[in-house]
Image 1 (cartoon, one colour):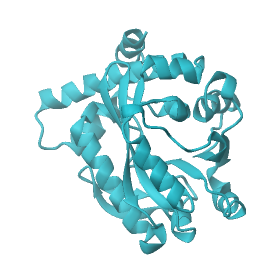
Image 2 (cartoon, rainbow, N blue to C red; image 1 turned 120 degrees about the vertical axis):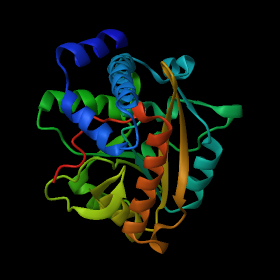
Image 3 (spheres, one colour; image 1 turned 60 degrees about the vertical axis):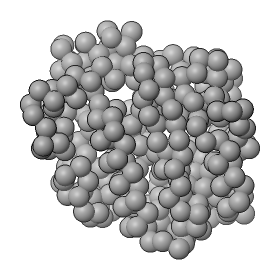
Length: 277
């Protein structure tokens, strides 16, 4: 299925073809054309796999996800320790790997029999509502969690997150934010300097809430190992966000993202208009 989706997107739809080539070329000015073309092809191959995996994931239980081994969580013990020892945890994720299967977080395999001690009811996924009601609902089911567990995790729209976080300040929670998109209109556009060789603006809302409420902050790295296999590692950014500024946190986030993209260039969402002004 992944091969079919990939071929169709690249050769028939030519899905955002010019945008993909422009983004890759500007991000890697040191590469020759044939190297850029390889990343371009690799991106579409991976895009097809993302679609196929998201469809499979939508009909899967936690038990099926765990048995498949689609994602291995490499440092469950460290994640649990940070979660249990801080007021709440902010997790900054990206559009690397397959972000559409993050809803299976508690069903992923772990190394060495490590256990996650985070209850599902403590997880809040922060999102921006899509204009299409049907698309919004379809993606919401994957964000929250698969099949029989639907409804136990909490979704929070981005414009309500500060109010929600303050209301639940006395609870230990994990807040998961996608943070590498171009800033939404009305969300504030904060210059952060160079990212992938280009002047970049970013949203500060996630870091701002974390700073106000002294959350720990972690970066979610999703490494593509092979077809149908990912390794996910949570990398600490800080234990107490109130000791940093939102700008420092987001700059660290983008440094980690740039490192991940350079490690596996095809693994990021190059079709997104990230540097629109």
